[in-house]
Length: 336
View 1: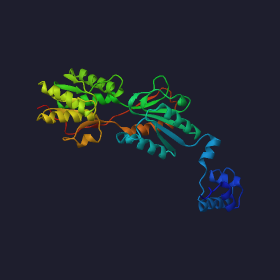
View 2: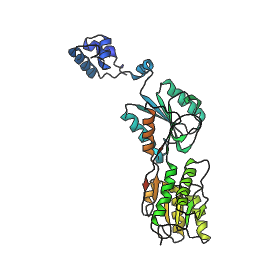
View 3: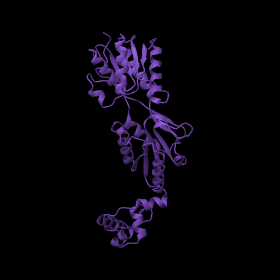
View 4: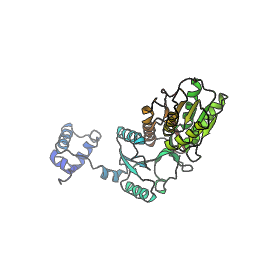
């Protein structure tokens, strides 16, 4: 392998001292009153030799490496949340930073190993991310570092968090049905698990808007957030003779199960029941009819987190809520 071109190589090619070459290549030539001809020789020599500064060595001296790390549980290998990775990469690159992406698979030993290796590389700051919005415990290795939590929270840590505005999303979902004219027969499908922030906040937002309108949910279908459970439990509701006028589904997977349960019984969306959901995953536009869904803004979350991480503001206890866009499609129609 060819040896790396050094600053001394550039100085030798330009016929200057190493110090002079250093000042030119770090943009300090004017401060040091270096002649224009000398500056040109140094720049020409650097281009001819394809010199690249040793950022690792510089980082060891200055303690600034212009690198940040994204520590995730299973985000990196999940196509659904790929926008988090893309958004973080783009935002870091735009600001001249290199992003390390590390996935822990929720293995504490692997996480500790990765954090140790990142510390050895003198990473400037960290994003600590979760696949779904939840409370986490900040690793001990990060408690003295500059950290922004992405799509999660760590109560008591003092760390700032960037999360989707799930409560506002719940309000938007309920409002979409009210605006379409629904006042009776609105059902909620999916368990509002107390351990899942999205479930709690979406449900709270739904009740907030319905209560203001003097409307009550007709009931809740207690299914898990997967199509199979939604198909079975919502199907059982239909078989018992209940005819929901509209359904708010906790996520698009639940909505898929609701669609299938209706279809299996000769009913359709929205003629027999309007449906609105959350997440706006790829399946939302592929369902027939296309599903109205409140989107998870993965890319915007990551961009906001990088901006906050690299800002000069005091980050203590900040919680930034990112709006969730409303995607209204053909799954909602006025009551028949």
